[in-house]
Image (tube, rainbow, N blue to C red; front, side, top):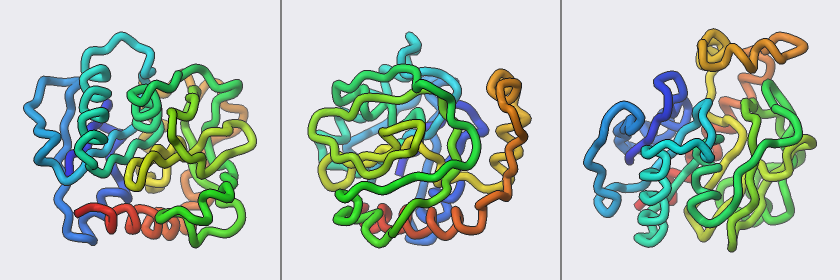
Length: 224
């Protein structure tokens, strides 16, 4: 498994834990720092993490990643995108990415659609789940995508394309330690100044750990 980071502090977190539990190795690639020779055909699958930049920024490594997403889909490889990663998948498949009406930073309820009830990852979930968010942009669903989850402030929170391509706008992967670290990062200081109340890293951390293990574990089961 190859995981693409866009800043050092936004790593795979609990997603990496699930991969390890299933005996799936995970190699980080940081194209924002240097070029890397990545064989999409040979990879078990691709993961694209978050970051404070925008898909609309003119950054060569983001364009390269979107080409890799298109390749992976053509090969039938599993792909997971988180936050910025979900927007990369949407854009690679022809969707637009643009500012959300409000920034979602902190813990907010996510509501699952009727289609989620038939989905391999989300089918056992009932009712809303409070999940961690940190984003200011959203996206149009790409052609052929199934909407799986929404929040009050952002309609497109999770989608699936085909059987094994998933975009998650919310952050199932975070631990309390990651949230603390994010709040201290210079890249996030602008967002932190806009908050009207502090972020509580522990607010729903116990349930999020259970949820991430369940959802990411099912995605691991889709990996050959």
